[in-house]
Picture 1 (cartoon, helix red, strand yellow):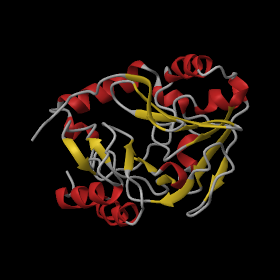
Picture 2 (picture 1 turned 120 degrees about the vertical axis):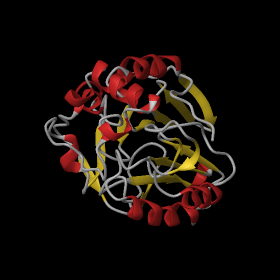
Picture 3 (picture 1 turned 120 degrees about the horizontal axis):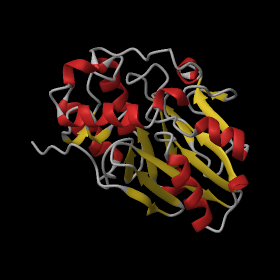
Length: 256
């Protein structure tokens, strides 16, 4: 089994028409370009804000062109610059109604099947935890205003992402299907590098950060049904062999 403690850093690589990928070595987030502005899907760790601003300038856009930050879920490695984007850019923050409680209080801890401390023998887990502390990630959990959505909603944000409810990793975890761009942003419903074990390939995230692995495995069925050639995960490299194949491989791999 191939293992990688961290990922290669990526700062705005074009992965599809009007879609750019960002990766700080631990977690991905994505920027969608539209005629009516920009949408960030997930928000990494707090320092990603400076990278976002640089990326917006490189696209000859203004900060005010960031119209939305769409969250796949409420974990601290995915909400880093959300509140700052709301406050400084006027962006609307979108989160599934079941994950809304996770993004408002730094003292609220997301439930998981197993203690993350059980994974400290893994270099990937140590790298993730150190990075979260170094970047002050828990402080980002103070999103003051947001809009909730439910399964099947097409959000009124540039790129028109459609919500595909994929609970298990968290109660409200949601992937986003961009039908016109033939892709799905899977968040942590399906990753290609496990941030706790470093294992490479399609899989769900370890129980250290997943509330219900059985439910997460069942939710792969939603991704398997999507007609999308490209799958963009929350951790790891883009998957180009179809969302259905990624889901089938992840299901066969099981939990960790």
